[in-house]
Structures are given as C-alpha cells and as structure tokens.
Image (tube, rainbow, N blue to C red):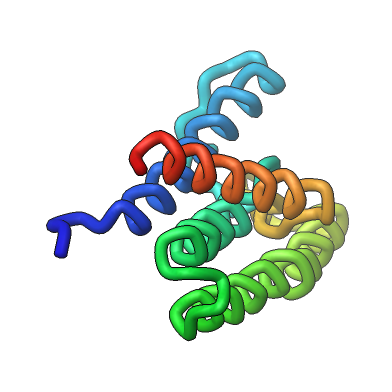
Length: 141
C-alpha cells in the first residue's frame, strides 16, 4: 500500500488545480488578486464535480469499472454533483435575492452568492476531473 495512494493524489491535485484556476480567472475578471477565491465554493470549473469525478475515474481505471469500489465511488460522486447543482444552486439563487433586498446597516457584508454551480460549471469540472485522471493513469502506468 502506498503512503499516499495515487487515486487520492490525483483527486486532491485536481481539486487544488481547480481552486487555483478559479483564483486566477476571477482575479483577472475583477482586475485585482483575490485569494478568497481559492476557498470559494462556486464558479467554473466545479471543483466538487472535478474532485469526485477524478476520484471515481481513477478508481475505475485502477480497480475496474465493474468493481464494487467503483460503484461506491460513482454513487458518492453523483450525490455530490447533484448537491452542488441543485441544493447549492438554490442557496446561490436565494443569496442573490437576499442581497438585492438587504437594507441592513452600512458596511454589512452581503451574503456570498458564489456557492452553487450551473450545469456548464458542473460539466467543465467533470470533464477536467475525468481527463486528468485518465492522463495521470496513462502516464504513471
């Protein structure tokens, strides 16, 4: 058994890459460096979708797509992706409504609107996670 399994290393690497990519992308958009994007939950690509897809694909490539372990990872991935899209998507929508209607005291921080994911953000994360897992497996095998 490896000290840090390649499957886990691949998924963590994808997660970190997505967060770094979002930090750079949104800092360019905002025309200022904002390290807070590194820990943000929303945006493109969906790091949630990329992380769990990378994990599932890496497990499938290593253990077989007909293995019980892949089945567990795939179910886990689908739950996380569904949650990122539907549940947190609704939270994001409500945050936008709250911020539009919020008339609190001056200086009050608005509710974060970057918490959910759109379908394109989810798909981008899934494609990135799956592709990186495939490349890592092919290169290291």
